[in-house]
Image 1 (tube, rainbow, N blue to C red):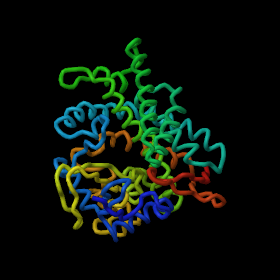
Image 2: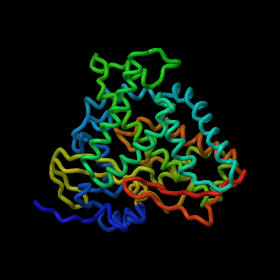
Image 3: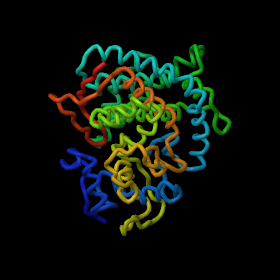
Length: 383
């Protein structure tokens, strides 16, 4: 059956302002079909339904292994239990001084000038360096990983399957070389993530190379792409909401909740996928078994049925309905690390400056799908 699309995720309107476009879709066509994404869901209640019913809406959406977020129980349960200890309070507490040192080094260089391009000079280097430090990549991987993330986003937008395959193989090569080095020389200064994955066992066997590759690929995409977008969104919000900026300077204990609220209003991640295992009806639309579902996080967290004055940043808002980290069994396992990194970055930014403002001569520009946040972010930092 040929189905007429309801919208085009790559249209000029969407690329110009994703939040405005997704808000419009939520109000006019909340369950919408496109050739690129299949069925896109824009309402909070529909996305929550998907998250709470992993039997009807499967996470096994790719031809390639995806650990653990592309798995269903019982496989998902086994691998999730293996990964969750990497994000417990003890390793997070051990990582915080390293994260703060990276932040300080970047700001020491940045604050030598007043006008800076915040994304290129802080957010992206911060995301790459903290990713390498948290996982165990050598600093020689800074540029290859940053370049790989960019190429991965471009290929995803273009839906270039051959290029996406080549980029996946390039990442496999990075990991294969790293694992080979560790196996030949297992002595390291500390017990890092790579060591933990090499020692881990599932079904009473060691992890296969392809499983480790998948874990690190998902971690890398989430860290470098999403964290850099999130840091940019946070800096932009502080620069445009001076009342919020000043309140956080006076009450730094509010920073964690402010981060959650700011990223609710402008999410750093656009969507995640599922596939139906049986026919369902959503928003009056009949969706057959085996069809693709795209959950639009940005729209869900701006749903006026759930969030009053959804476009406003309110530090007293109840965060319980916020889907920033997903929900259900597939809630983001790396949330403790991401929260730590963003908190440290904003704490140090506010501690080392007296004012953050947008650069009046060079306006910020929005990122385009599949990325979110900003493409450029010129700011003025005063010490």
